[in-house]
Image 1: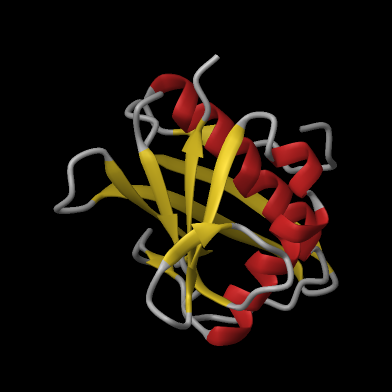
Image 2: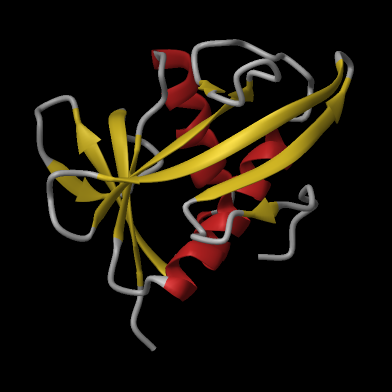
Length: 149
């Protein structure tokens, strides 16, 4: 994907990515974490601000830095990196709030034509079912799988 994004620094394990958001509220350290779940090959993607005192991720804070498109493009770039290293994984993501989940849906919808050549995208419906992503549907979570080439 050729979108404006922030440079990221990946951990040695490729499970943690860090970058700095720059916007109307200044510079904010961000973390993206891919964590194993109890389901084999399923990883949970979490995006949040880095607590500079503890180094931990805070996915409940609202930064409002005015750069959400660039932040989401940065997250997408890590999906490429992570699934290149681990091609058989599935990535689960949901916003920590309903409005964040909606923001993720808008980001996916706006760039679906760039995403679908490389990834299958599913949404978890309000009827508790997975379906192929449809920009007109409401979802509570998303699942992304890298296509085999």
